[in-house]
Length: 137
Length: 137
Image 1 (spheres, helix red, strand yellow):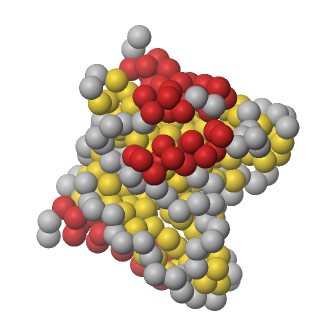
Image 2 (cartoon, helix red, strand yellow; image 1 turned 135 degrees about the vertical axis):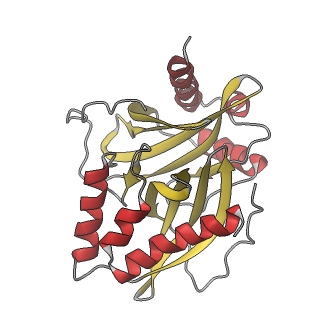
């Protein structure tokens, strides 16, 4: 796979882990030694790996944990870091859209997650077609 | 100045431009050729330089443009990209706190802004002391 395919694969693995409520997959995905930043909607950011994984443990363990859909809007490259920005929503609440930026960087030969920052977006519903895909830089 | 001081200087320049409502300073700050991502609270992200600057033109031109305070919470480095995450609030509304991540990368020998993503944070007021500064990686 080329770099873009590997990045999409890592990003897909994140949303798959979310859908499957699989903490072990989250543990494999988040980087072991790189700096981390995880800002859930409305929450203070988390930086320590244990705190990040504990937050996912809590989210994935809730009965109300949403089944998230995801649509990539852009993939941007800044040197070794790649940022994938997209929309997240649940079919149960198609108006409650979040914008999320996920960051990936290679560690031990794999793209690992280092960044997740999500927050609500107004005036977007997923019944509306997305903007054309932004070219990948 | 060392790299950290230069980064703080660039981040300060962003908030100074905001406070002074100085679009020309924003134009100097945002990178000319690097990929850009600017996600204002609740809004769809912007990627094109002209669109990013037009959004700042509109924000800075509003009579209701807030006088923002800013407190850095973390500075993380991912290769050539540095992310400064902090809280933004106005004294008029100390409970309306935003979490903002600003990204900087060198272009033409200067740190230029390439990323701004901001959204509301609950349960934080700036009357409460911030968490201890996260070590800079």
